[in-house]
Image 1 (cartoon, rainbow, N blue to C red):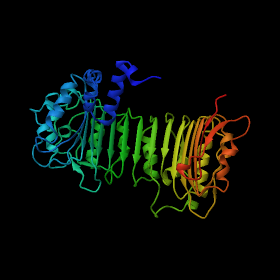
Image 2: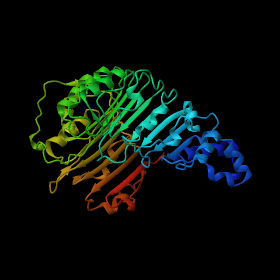
Image 3: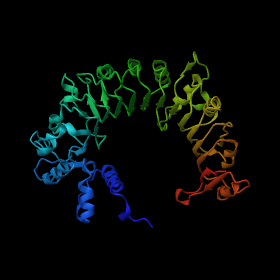
Image 4: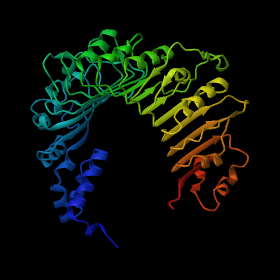
Length: 443
């Protein structure tokens, strides 16, 4: 039997480093296990580089000797920092001052996460800039009900000269800005904005200053009249995620027209809970034009309006499809199934999360989908029987959840106990009745 003592030192070091980075917790406690463990830990500089620090305005918060120990033990390895400013007031934060050992090693910082910053303490971050080797920068806010964080004092937006020449990912959560960065972010490839307040001019500035952007993510309401058609200014854009409550068919179609080279599109991934929707038996099937998206491989549509718009979209290379919709029946279901049928041979992954109104009975009948590999179905008040998975000849795994459970749900496993056995299935009781999952049995 293999024990941890028999592991090569290199493997043990990799494990310690992996856990330290997953938890942002340096292996201080392992120093006292034994001399052997101490030697391994002290010779694993990467394990000391991931730090989660609660910043306060007093010298002992966080304990400076502990932070300095971690920085020294990390040698010249990259630093990955998560700073929580919730307990910091308007005073200067000692650990974020230029004389601190942390800031003296700022050229080693690769990732910087800022949690719960406020207008009164954001200025403490000014000494991190310029961040010559920073790759990932995130501002994360716990409360979505407080005033958005103004980024006027952040050098990344304020200073004219390049502040982060290697910045690859920028994530802003619950922030506000009227103007974009004052300089080009030439290396930025991913921009995520969640529940941000952005003016039209700010949006335009962002498009202008991020010429290399490949992935753009919006979650929540981002301004009232942000011109999303400006994404046409991004020639390299390949992934677009528009998640908001104020998207309609027109905005969805405009986005498709402006972004012909997209590889992945996620649009309005929400379940419609409002009562101001068009009755689904009044869906208009007439469209003025057909939009062909030659390059899209993955499509995620999560609104009724988005599914309606599928009538006018042709995606010949589609392999991964996710559809989420509430209040579904009749014509809307027909539109969805017709779109799925158009990709019978290419579709490899299909995920459907559908909610129908009671007491109507809606029957879900999927086409053969001869190339389908993975199937995920989560439905309410919709009739879909697990035995239908046999028609998908290439299927390797599936997950089906039906509510309320069908009358024969207790005997679902017996359906698959046939010879030759095709799927190994289980009905996990921890997930409640009406759930079955399976994997294809290897021949």
